[in-house]
Image (tube, rainbow, N blue to C red; front, side):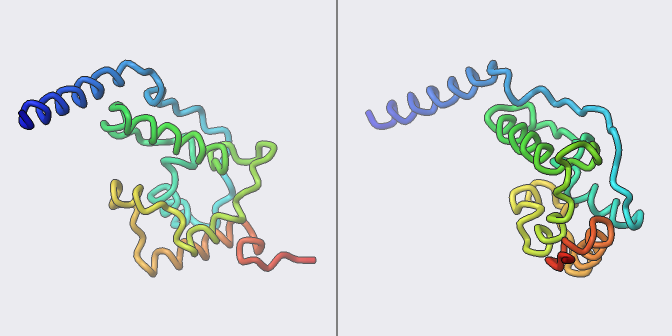
Length: 152
């Protein structure tokens, strides 16, 4: 009897997984045009940014195959939408796009890139020396405010 219940449960879960595939959210995968980028302090800072941050913080997202499978596609779409809304280097200079000074702090504190992203994208993992180099490059690109040393 319990074997039938387990089998029925598995079939219900599989059926639900198939049904949720028809929900269209999470498959838009748009990459709007790049309008402008910040004036990077060096090509290396840009390279590290695109390696560790650009999928969510630019209009040059690389959409992996699993970004088409719900419910993972929903999470990825939400992360990209939120990331672009908070800080988008592909639309640099637009009104309200002034979060650059917080980028170095987020990297320094370890909140960016998020651990789950790094787990799925090992290339985004920065060594300690790369992280230090990247933070210095972000500070040079976005200004002293990134260090918490705002001028009076």
